[in-house]
Structure formats: structure tokens, C-alpha cells
Image (cartoon, rainbow, N blue to C red):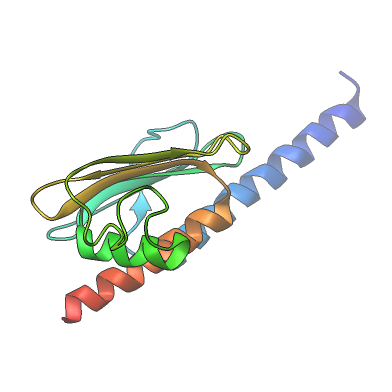
Length: 157
């Protein structure tokens, strides 16, 4: 391979690494409980969190620059507040009260234009397990920020 081509690939790789690091910083700025995982659990950098009474989960960045959240057992009221703030109530056919009032069950949406996937499992214990996959970094940061705000309000309530 020609030296100038090798240099261009090297420059691109360094830029990509910088972007991945910046994405992780944005994730943790929005949701401070996230910490780097000991090992990658996706196709790229992985951050994990676990907090008794608030849930656990991970945020991953794939090799295409898209992000995925997989959170488990998050209080339904906090998820409902964050999701309603972003999409409004009943976007996922969860009912007019949003996820805060949703009946137990699975709610999902596949965005055919972006290939993003959204799935929310409402449990009868008052928690929600959800996955939001293959979305833009800024969208995940918005979700994380609103969820953090909702959890903070429920901590002080």
C-alpha cells in the first residue's frame, strides 16, 4: 500500500477513535452512572451502570457510529416521564397515559427509514426493561439525559 494511503487510513482511524471517545463522554455527561465496561459487549465501546432501585444496563456504540441502550428494571414512572417528554404518550401503543400508566406487556416500534428498533417490556412489578437500538448518538444522549432527570426527580420524591 502506498505511504499516502496508509497515512490517510491512519488519520481516519485516529479521527474515528476520537469520535468514539467523544460519544462516550456525551453518554456519561447525560447519564453519570455509566462507567466503562471491563470488556466490550457490543461491536464497539460499552458503558455499563447498575443502581439498586433504579435498574441496570448498558450503552454501546457500534462500528457504524450508531448507539444502542439496553436497560433493565428501570422504574416505570421514570421511563414514562422520559419517553413522554421525547415522543409523547401512545407513540408505542402503550396508551394515553404513556408508559407510566401502561399495562404489563411488550411494546415495540421499528423505524424502517433508519433501521432503529425500540422495544419496551413493562413488568407487573412497576419496572420497564427496554432496548433502543441503532440510533444516532445525539438521540441516545437526549434519551439518557431525560431519563437521568426523571430518575433524579423520583430520588427526591
